[in-house]
Length: 276
Image: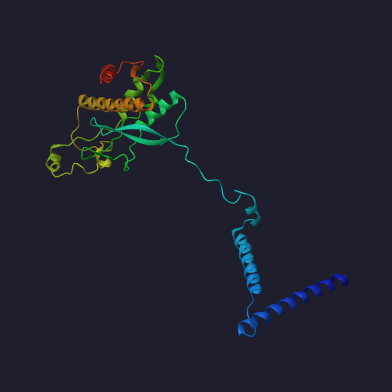
């Protein structure tokens, strides 16, 4: 027992002598009695840096030895695995432009077709790429119909030169009924239309009819005609996008099948697309 106490006393005495020596040396350096040496500056800087190094990890509650193992303290950088594909967007008035969108491109043709249909019906990004100038006017893309869930099946014929897409007319009709049609200008708005800038961006909140109960109501016949026009613009943009991403395709045929007869004449629409 006395031996251990003696060792502790000796360690404390040595530690005290060390602190006393260091304090005296710092005092002499501060008063100018002793000149600084390069060895002292190097040792002081090394020990001070080591103290700061361990103090930082103690405050951060991290193990400093994790730096010895690569990528333990910091994760691997994330890579963008998306690939650009060409998608045609429409302004809802018959004009279309191709744009590039980065997506996680599917390798299987059927899955890629489904993905392209979803991108065509996706909301516009309204960025500088999708608002390109067209004939001196600002191109304002519109939201097309998202009809990807109406696809029953798709297949290729004639050595992948012909693509056939079978649509569920009942699902298409449901999508068209829920589609928010653009608002039509009333007579009160026609007076202010002359002062409007044709290149000004469209206010998407007041552009669509959803959520408003004011203004004149359109007849069912007019609404159906406008819905058919929106579907026609969607299918035209879809055809152009499919032709761009499947270079071997020469023709695209749309088949419409359903359990109940639809009030929309999809067959006439399909014939118009084939004759475009």
